[in-house]
Length: 387
Image (cartoon, rainbow, N blue to C red; front, side, top):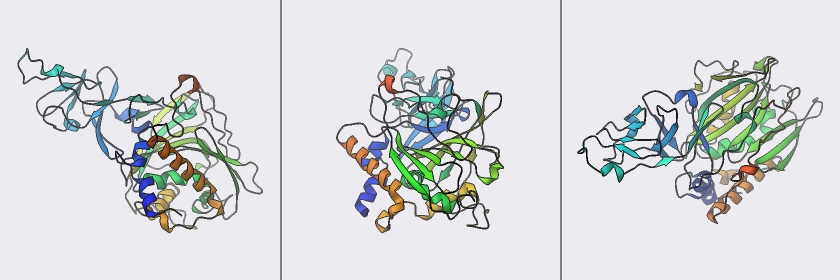
């Protein structure tokens, strides 16, 4: 049983909150690389804070604080130039490191620009996504998860928003048994059956092996702490095709969570082809699928009347914007949830004591390729990885 007080501790993401400080020790995807270009910067809201993201004329991606150091005007309405971002109010120019390069309203011999700066944050790109870090220095390394490095196949980066707290979105990855019911219509081979699930703690989080009598192979999926999920999928709408997936759920604030997907379809020619778009089975013209709280596309009429892509969101948002875990009644089948919450508590405590939380990597010698055993029936877990 979780008390309401502990629920607050585990869910709130703002600066200075226990969970918020823990979450600031990780790299977070905040945008598609293809969307960060041109003269207009991009507003970013991450863990309850505001930022501005841009790509300068030297092709460097940068994220800086949201307001100009001069008179606090919004840099989100600035202009991206070759050497940085220029404020709309008085034209001050800042480079990717936050250094002030120009104060055009001052006298030519003014030294003011040498004395002021704005805060900048580490940013890097991987697999068509922009990752940023807003925690204390030095920043850890971005882990080399397999789908973040070049693999053969058609790679799709896409996403959508859950209108609820990050922890609900993270916990669903450790809830193996919901597959048999929530997704019964699109996984008829699992529908209504009782699986046997084994959970194993790993350096990156949790691996679980999912066994159902009569199936030709066990299902294997991974929880990447704190909010990642590495899994294989073969829903009925794929019509016999299959893909490997990585999703990282980025908390915007206490009530909004963004799902960033990397989905990989195999290719016979072994080439890597990148697409900033939804996979072919997802009927949406944009890479970011629009969503609205409490509104779900119809489908899967024999079961819940909600389309496959929205079933998790329907269940998560239905728990409330922030789920009241003090009213839960967990059973023996919730071992994955119990393990995840133990790791979460331990990670929050580690940060409070000045240590790194789970799955933070700092030693370059230990930041080696992380491959997962994700599989489902005829979907194997081996990827052809180009390092």
